[in-house]
Image 1 (cartoon, rainbow, N blue to C red):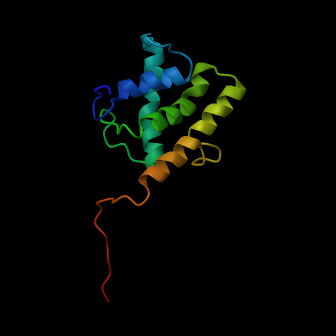
Image 2 (image 1 turned 90 degrees about the vertical axis):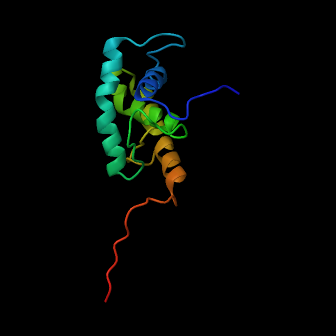
Image 3 (image 1 turned 60 degrees about the vertical axis):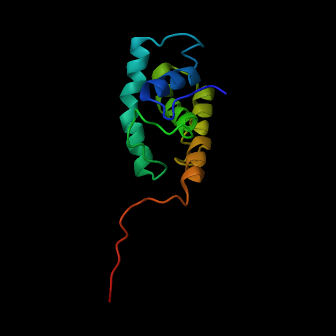
Length: 129
């Protein structure tokens, strides 16, 4: 087995997204413009995932490895229009990512399954009568 880091970074995620979009080949470095285009969508996408209660990425430079490929699929679907993909490819990327309607995509459902029933560590509010 290879020795991989326990967490992945946003730079790793951007490279994976570009590979999913077909912009980046194996062993190739991303172009600065492509890197910036995906990077500019990360925060909004992470906030959307939190608002939809799919998952909460607290630190983009410490991404859970089990979420990594699902997040890459979701971000690829969100960025696809910036990279001029065909309508068929766009539909495939969205279906693999968040889905249409939102939250029904393969990656979104996978994240929901991974996180269901997990402790939130939030304070539980109660009312005493």
